[in-house]
Length: 209
Image 1: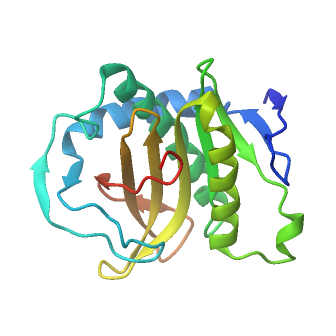
Image 2: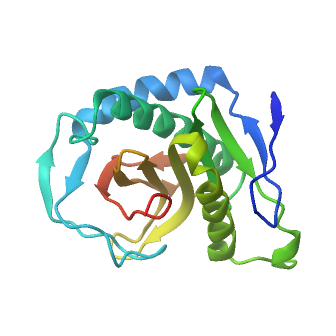
């Protein structure tokens, strides 16, 4: 993996930005993301009160041609690319562990997909998930002038559905904010993970407020 060093402006922590590699995995997930785009559901209400672990609203308006309707074609392509980068990373984590800590990636203005690796030393020995996510968000805010779009990926639980899910909070500099959920369940025996249907909801603006 190629690594690029970066010092976040006016940030207490220094972020190491690493180019997201594993291109073979990414290629297959890009194809999957393309195939599932027509089945993704967009929600009519903004998820303003959603917190990690809460269930998002279920008032769907039916399948859409694209979950990024309403943004420019260039922004849609960039968001699709970032989603296709975040999903395999999350799935790779779940293939080796029961859950994963939140992580952040963004599409740099030079069109590289970069991952932020945080120094969590200042958060104590066992930082909470919300602390890690907040630290990742702070770095994205510091870097937003150099980014086309951002994604924070978390491991969450959908209470009403009684299932876990990969949650990806996507934002674009043009103003789009989308939360994508990929529910999953683990097999009772073995390490296999069964993934459900990708769904999208109107998101919350956190990076570009």
